[in-house]
Image 1 (spheres, one colour):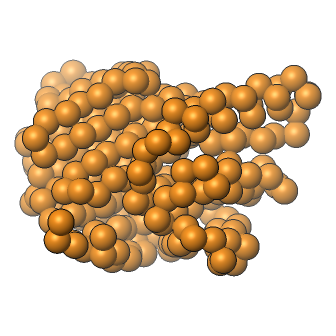
Image 2: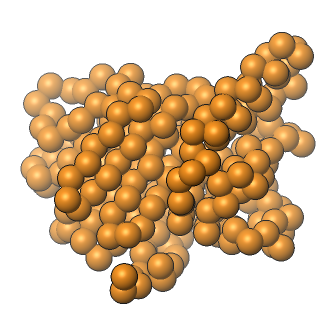
Length: 229
């Protein structure tokens, strides 16, 4: 298949837009500069936490009535919202041009695997190894829940992964991302969920500089990169 350029724009926190030759995707919009495209557009929201879902996304259909929404089933959809699908873990949407799979989260909602034009994109939402320093029982459960879901993903090829690197976890800030890279081996991993603490992303990128997965550290709102896949 002929290679193509993928344009990625970091919006803020876990929010990104991804533009392919035919499609324009927005994942987990919270805040930040965004310019909608005239291409076929899908707005993804992995769950209803306010740092992953800004209700303003539902106003965008006033200017673009053909926008589609792919939402976690925990999200309450406003009346008069058109063109939406609510997904639970295990749900699949498939047509000639697009494949969307909903995987589980280790918090609320779902994570998304999207395939289009031969490109496979994973946005984890709040799926992560939330390795808080808790009781041994709580830590064991968090590890099991995370690794069990990784087993379900293990046979998926992933080109671009958006995955949490969260400094609130202190020394364990990158435990989930490192395990994900070890088991899934995406071509690129773009850290997210670091809010206003970008140094953690730079530290992680330096730590993983010899990894076969390339770490792309986008930390400024509106920062963009073009990948050829």
